[in-house]
Each structure stands twice: as structure tokens, then as C-alpha cells.
Image 1 (cartoon, rainbow, N blue to C red):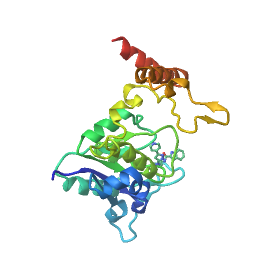
Image 2 (cartoon, helix red, strand yellow):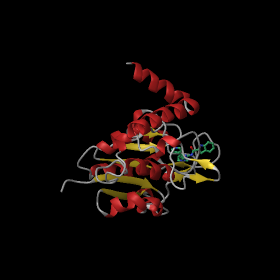
Image 3 (cartoon, protein in one colour):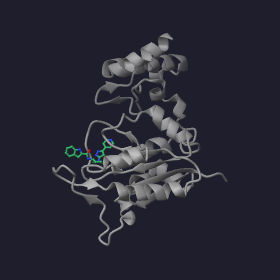
Length: 237
Ligand code: 9WO
């Protein structure tokens, strides 16, 4: 068998993994070897007897900074034993936003190396010297990159071949067509006086498809002007 899609996570808290990725869809896929997860404890690459990974910021100020030498040693060890070139990503609110297109491209590659920062961040020089790509999940600050790494892996793993089965083909998802999801309904037909849209009970699949398309467009237009404009300019081409 060829190598499964492989995630390597550099962290000071390896116990946080697989965490939620050990359950549900991603967990079953992990147990079935559809993907592989390895954590690397950054602290193991510290060189002093106290296993120091952080230090005070040059220039002063609050908090601590992750040392470049320790993180670089961890990254170099990971890269040295990898047969293929794998993108190395630092999860940080400073990066460009992760989107479904990048998720898709990660799923199409051999794997990913994710670097989880702690403290006030990592020494800037290691980002440049090791060519780390920075990616953000949004404009908020976590206490560390780990939850962002977990969310990133969840998004990628569900796209891997065999993970979702054919229950919901990812290509059918409206997000990948540049639209938000249309509204969903299930039983009961009437709940707290609220009815399910008639068309969904009609059995007319062409009409249902049309309704879902126009609802996806309406929701996108009402909520996300940025996505709506991009969708329209693509449709015009
Ligand atoms: C800490 C901090 C304290 C005062 C003012 C600004 C500050 N920014 C940070 C900060 O960015 N800390 C980071 C914590 C250091 C690197 C890892 N951390 C992190 C990653 N927090 N949030 C993310 C993250 C990653 C991806 N998408 C969204 C948030």
C-alpha cells in the first residue's frame, strides 16, 4: 500500500492530540489507516537540562517567545525523515485566511506539517529561515495554535478518499461552488407551528434542486457580500 496522507504536528502539548480527531469520522478514518497522525513534542528538542523552549522578548515587554533554535531543531528532524516535501504551516492569526480551496489542495498532497505556537508567538527568524507558511482561521486569539491545528486537520481529513464514503460527496457542497449552504429540514413536518417548505415535500427533484440553488444564493447574498460578489463574477465569465 502507498503511504496514507500524513499529518505531523509540532506542539508543546502532544496530549491534546488526537483529541476530537480520535472520534467520529476522522477517528474512524485514523483507526482504518486512511490517514496518519504523528505529534512531535517540541520540548524534546531543547538543548539545556531544564528543557527550555521559551525566553523573554528582545526589546522587552510582556510574555515569552518560543525560541528559534528549539523549533528549528524539531522542524529539521521532521523534514530529515520525510521522503517527500510536505507543506509546513504555522497556525497564526497573522496569516492569510484558510479557505476551502487551500483545504482541498492540502488533501490532494502527501500530508502537512503543522506548527503550534504558544506564549506570545515564535521567534520571527524561524518562520523566515524554514519558509513556514502562515495560515489563520480567523481574527481571534487562542492560547495556542493547537485548536486551530485540530480544526485544520478535521477540514482536510473529511476530504480524503474513503473517509466520507458516498453519503455526501464533497464536490456537491455548496461551499465548493462558492455559496453558503441552503437551509435543511427534517421531521417533524410541523414543529412549534413552523412548517417545512412545501417544495421539499413535493417529490419533484428538479424543483427541489432549483429551490436549494436559489436559497443558497439568497443566504449568501444576505450574509456574505464578499462571497456573493466572487460568485457573481465567476458566473459571468
Ligand atoms: C498573544 C497576544 C497577547 C497580546 C496581544 C496580542 C497577542 N497575540 C498573541 C498571539 O497571537 N499568540 C499566539 C497564540 C502565538 C501563536 C499561537 N497562538 C495562537 C494561534 N493564537 N491564536 C492562533 C490562531 C491560529 C489560527 N487561527 C486563529 C488563531
